[in-house]
Image 1 (cartoon, rainbow, N blue to C red):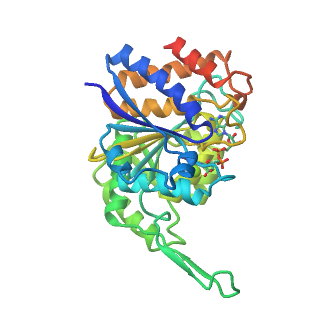
Image 2: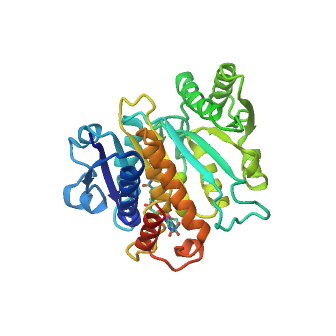
Image 3: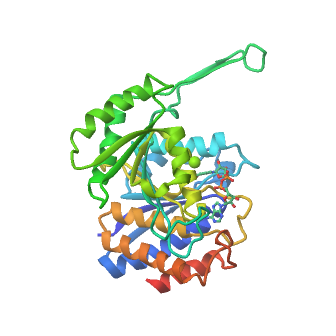
Length: 353
Ligand code: NAI
Ligand code: MG
């Protein structure tokens, strides 16, 4: 039977890059795994909000829950509607409602992509960042008093649970165990944030005992930020809290060449709910409608979806096709110094398949 995929292109460059991802993985899955998809395109976006007064219909979560996976572009058009509505009514609740507690963000230095760091060979940077995606610093816990006055007070609370820490750590250790280098780095700031991050460190020490075959260490986030720039090749699997993982993956995207290549998966490992696959970038209002966005981040995110659906050959074939186009260097979008269009990249990746 066909894999049922909900497709939310969203705003700006979201639908532009997702269209290319759909074309590519459809062909890859047919070729490598004889698999098929039933695509369900959902129009939820800023303009949908303007027409209906909500980002998704009242039965929208039930609709999504009936799919095997969700392919997501980006939402946000802050010139028209605040991100507090668009991002906060659709994207962030989806991660929590569907318990997508693993945010996987690979960072890989492809051949043919100029690295802003001196002397890094293709393939030298190859890390998987496991970001906790449902609690931590982004827990919706806090409040403010006396807004707008000199006495204004705001409290923003991080929420760390032993279950939440252990399950993201375990997911990261499982991944590290399957990789050649079998190395894991756990990132905290437990010298300053002793309670929440201290619990994370305790969970790390407990979980690492289950993985004697994995070489693991703990690193403070400020030192990690420095090492992501100074020696990113030393990292293999990295596991971090919601905020730290968010910030460090913009850094890992930058050191591997372009945000236009950064893919991500929001995974519910129990498969009780659908997982969601999206490029790391946003809707890029500055280049929306020009047809010049790099669709490779979306294509690589769709490849992560293929992995999740058990279509490993198709996923590998898709990544190889992207790598081939990058290595040849003939068709490149402006973010990589070229003049190609979004569709031309889609065409080139399809041809490479
Ligand atoms: P952004 O990622 O949309 O853009 C940042 C910069 O990167 C821009 O200069 C843009 O042109 C460039 N860029 C991004 N993707 C690119 C691609 N595929 N190819 C070439 N260049 C690319 O971040 P920004 O501008 O801070 O946010 C714009 C909107 O997107 C906001 O409303 C924000 O809240 C939203 N957003 C949504 C996300 C999501 O839905 N997952 C994630 C991040 C931001
Ligand atoms: Mg971010």
